[in-house]
Length: 308
Image (tube, rainbow, N blue to C red):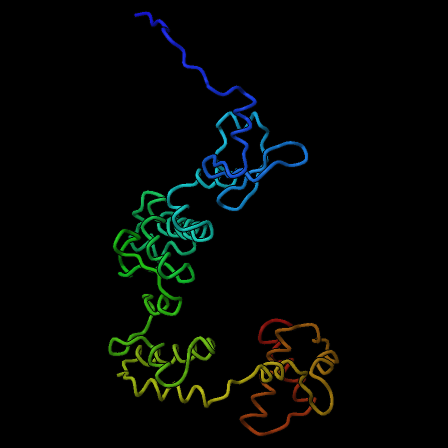
């Protein structure tokens, strides 16, 4: 069916008048507000976000511009991105891919503890993951860690929350519980914060785990005694290890020189074997060997092992 134009409604303003009206200071164009003209005659507009743009009169009349480029880019973001903001969105996306890899890629270093135990990431994609955690992010911020409430459960709706790194660490499978209380909390009640000295906490952890492994009964009072002992006992420095590397001296001569006199100076096995015998003689028999005895020990060691 043909359409016939019976009447055409024209614009009551001509083009120059239209330009003048549209470029009046204070005129709104979507999120843009006309603030004046620059030296080149372009119309200067300020966006509601605070950014300023410049358009020609023809661009303004086209009706295609109603916000700045930054707002255009923001509107093209996903709903989840716009909901939590760029910083939180990037953090959550990174955590989603980390969880996905741990559960599905066998070459991931953590696969054994996640996918190897049957744990799966049940979210359809990053958008569902972000939108599910958005309320927690908006309430508590992104400074915490994403934690599975049931440590044997999946990454799925109803089993995720955002908690502090300390609380997340106490929810691990390896966390030691004494009467249902994490070891870290008992240490804190004894006046020691594990986060203040992780090396000391590692020693306490190993002592408690060893005593549990050999069948000892553990209680909060025993743990506090272990903590007190660990804090009072100084840690042995590496000075002893450095002392072992000092040259062995017999009658004012180094063991290396003594072995070189009999042609065995370049063999490390003979050197270590002879040094061990010298140490044994000094510690157990409380005697100081002479050079000739040391050389005889070295020769005996070499002959017994076919080195001489």
